[in-house]
Every structure is written in structure tokens, then in C-alpha cells.
Length: 482
Ligand SMILES: [Zn+2]
Image (cartoon, rainbow, N blue to C red; front, side, top):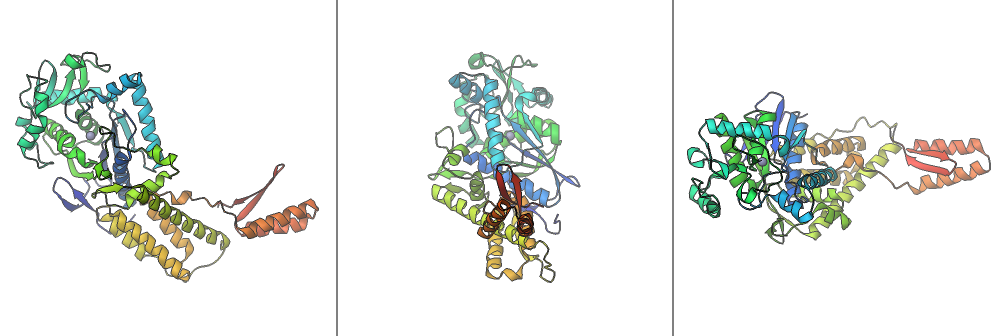
């Protein structure tokens, strides 16, 4: 815990870096928009989840208890982020000839597997939209009471003209939004204003065969996409809460609508800090499922890439900068990660051989830790944080006596609580040749029934940090972990 430094975060709402001051004394409420589970996440989506994970880990490193909530969208997200097209899950279910529930279940577990492989911590509350229908209906009813919702024969809409601060997050001019929403007005002639967005779709017209539907005061139907995040965040974090994140593509529609719903219903701010991660580009174009321009984590794994190499690549760019994905840069990231692992392995080995050594007298490593914290507390400057790490390694390699290996290793493990590169899981599989020779010699002595001499060698191996396990199948040498 290092509270001596302030944490600065870039707030999209104010368009500047601000000192982070939590609303509550010891905990931080964090809401991160989750995936729509109609397909695999692409690595552009995953980049956003990595940024959010670093944020969460940084807050935890700084000593805060983080209450992390994430939704899973399994209904109501239409093929455009606005209200046009079909429900993404229903469309996929038809294509794959499966039920909507099967689709949701399959891609939810695919998502969980992806984040596990990327060392992304799972949200404490991870809840699908379909499990929060009651809360969504209650919120829409509240919007009726505050005069911000109205009903047509096809749907229930949010009345944007009645909500004066509608574009405060996007800072878009209102006529830009009108153009963007024009196509839709043709679909519902009773809609008062093209920029109004749907809160509830009725099971009628193009949705008359919609598989998922629930009773509501406005008839059978299903919620619009945006209302789930307002309902879930309020239910689990209250209002206002500290930090809400997502990709930059959410600023102008999804998050703008979330603010309208939550602030329109409760008459107070929804979120103190809004944070957004930039795009991952593929061939200089935005990665997107709709345009068929996307790569999944499985694609990388099939090419022999360690998922954490992708995490390393993501950390190499600031979350607010676009990152152009290339196979060359990914393989460079994998090389760097392996060099990092080799270093950790080497130090662990040193430590083993000096288990009882006394290193007192060496200076402790205060400065690299401070520099790392300074970088990470400066709006999560992960590229700089990584360079602090490499500088330390370079320094150490230049003059190993300067640092105590135990302390260097401890520092790396501490910093990895933020980076999440799995340094503690680095397993040394390389048994040094000298140890192998000793083991062979011991085996020979055992065969000659020279037990005492064999045991002497076993102790020697043990002191070097390895242990021998004898079994009927033979002897096995392993690293000692204690
Ligand atoms: Zn959301």
C-alpha cells in the first residue's frame, strides 16, 4: 500500500487529468461494461478489459478495496449500438441453429476463459442483463414518473429533448446526433424525436417472434441495451459511484444514454470519473466484428503466442493511445516477456543457492519502486512503468552486487500485482547440469548400495535448492519450493 502518492486519472467528463478522490473512505465503486455474448471477444475488446484490469489492480495496490461490477449483455443489444437492426444474440442463435440461452452460455464461458488466460481479474459482481429484468423495469417506471419516458405502439423511449445535459459526456452538437439517428425514425413513426432511444421493445412488428421476453407495464417485450447498465450499476454500487469505464466507442451513444437514464431517474450525478480505452487497430483500421476485421485470443494461441504476450503488448501502449496491432510487434512483446521470465528464473535460482546467506548491508531498492508508482499513478502510464522495470533489470545486470536478489525479486513480484504478467508463476524447468550430474552419481551409488555416500549427495542437491523424489519408476529432481 502506497498512499503517499496521489493517483491521477483522466476523466472523459472534464477532459482532463484529475486527482482521484474516492466518494467513500475505503472502497472504490468500479463499473465496467461487459461483453455482448453473441460471439468471441476480439483482441480489441480484450485490450479494453486489460486497461480496466490495470486500473483495478492499481487501485488495489494503492490500498483501496475495489467493488467491481460488470454486466453481461445477453439481450437487447441490436446490430447497431443505436436501436436499429436485429438483436445480436437472436441473430446468432438463428445462424447457429441453437437457442439464445445456449449462445449466451457458450460465449460467456469463452469470455471467462479469455480473461483468465490474460490474467484479468473477474469482477466481484458479474451479472447478465436477463437476471436483472425487474430492476430495469423499475428504472423505466421511474423515468415515466420524472416525465422522461413515453410509449408508442412499438416501444418505450427516452425523451432526449427533456434532458438538458444529454451531450455532456460526448460534447457532440445535438444535430450530429440527429443525423446519426435518422434512419431509425422511419421504423417507428410514433417516435417523437429521431434522437430518442429505446428503453423497452415490445414483442410486436419486427420483434414479434423475439425469443426472450418478459411481462412489463407496457406489455410483453425486452429491454433496450443501455438500460441494463444503469439498472445494474445503481443496484450494486448506488449512485453516484466512483469510476465507470469502457471503450471510446461507448462515449457518444451507450454511455451518453446511461447518464441520461441514471441521472434522469435519480436527479443526481451517476459517476464521478468516466474513463475510456482507445482502439486497437488492425491494418490501421478499427477492429470490429461487424466488418469482419478481427482476431481472437484463440487465433494467437494457435500461432504459439502466450496470451500474456498480448497483455504485455497492450501494456506497452498507453490506454488512451491507439495501438496498431502487427504480428511483428506481438512477437517482439513475446520476446520481451520471455526475457523478463528468464530474469525472474535466474534470480529465483540465485536465491535458492543462497538460502542462508546474509545480505544485510546492501541498500534497499526504494527508487525504482517510487518511479514505478509515479508512472502508474499518472493515469496508468504502463509504458513508463515497464521501462522502470527494464531499467532496474539493466542496472542489476550491470552491477549485480548493488542489489540484493531477494529484494529485486520481491519488488518485481510487488509491481506485477499491477502489471499482471504472471511473474510469480514462472517455473524453472531448467535443472542445472551440475545438479543433473550429482543426481546421476547418486543413482550409481544407490545401485552399488552405497547408501551413506548417496545420501550425502542428496543433501548436497537439497542445499542447492533441489530435491529428489524416489519412486519405483526412478528418481525425479524438482525445484524446492519453500
Ligand atoms: Zn454499459
